[in-house]
Length: 369
Image 1 (tube, helix red, strand yellow):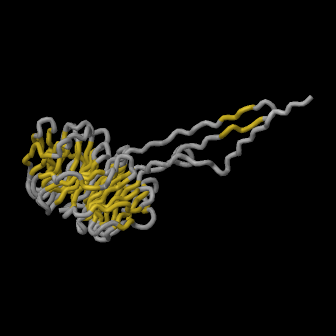
Image 2 (cartoon, helix red, strand yellow; image 1 turned 90 degrees about the horizontal axis):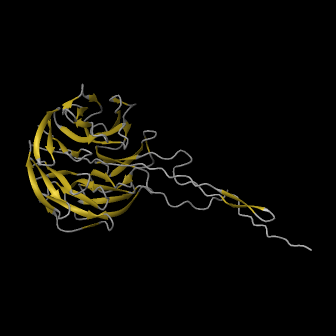
């Protein structure tokens, strides 16, 4: 059973300010030329993909503008497996399954800024839509989910009791409910995020491994791994199973396009990715062949590219979702890549003075006679 996380990201560009030229009483002075905000001039920026290399204890970072690995890997804890980015892209949270901890990575400096200990068998991780909390599943530890306050990077409250072997978490768009897949319990727990208690448990097929919720919040899609070959569809209004889609053998992660039209599911057992039409809940065409043993998958904010890890290939494949074809060669990362998340450019500090800008000149009036 493999487990990775899906990250959801947004990219924003700042607007440039306009300079002002003033005319004095006697002379002409440059009053000031304001500097452009981040990303407006000089090409802007592109999202980055953070990939957990399970056997190496680190993260690889991929620039989506060039589809190349940026710099050296970021060392985290042992056995990193799940990755989630905050909505503003400033931080990435990484579950270290082998170290029983969560690493917090500053995406601007590419460095670990906090380590949250005592999180035994940390598996999946997801960030609430408002970025205030991270929910972490414990696969082998007490059938629970821990909640981290992202402002303090400390665990808050008591663990939430769910089903057996929780793996993944996904939130409704309003953040009021979390859906947790219980891989060993053949169920999906529904958690009220206000009280952090389980309010419902939905019986599904064996080995639910991951979950994604449609942008309108009306459906949850749950793939099944190991012997499972289906994706279960849950109506979130009634918390009942309304459909089951036959996809392929030993499924992995799932990602839904921003328009809610399609879902991309990794098929670990077939080295491929299936595309599901969510209007009809049917598989579109033949599976897309990728690298060896695909697991984690995430979509760019505009939905035009899917990035997925090939666990046994030590690489990441890229799919053009407009043509549903693989783009270029797999991108080499570390050993046993699992979860991945796509984060936008981190927030930029206010622009400072430009040393090349003209210095303000004031000519005093001169009175004669």
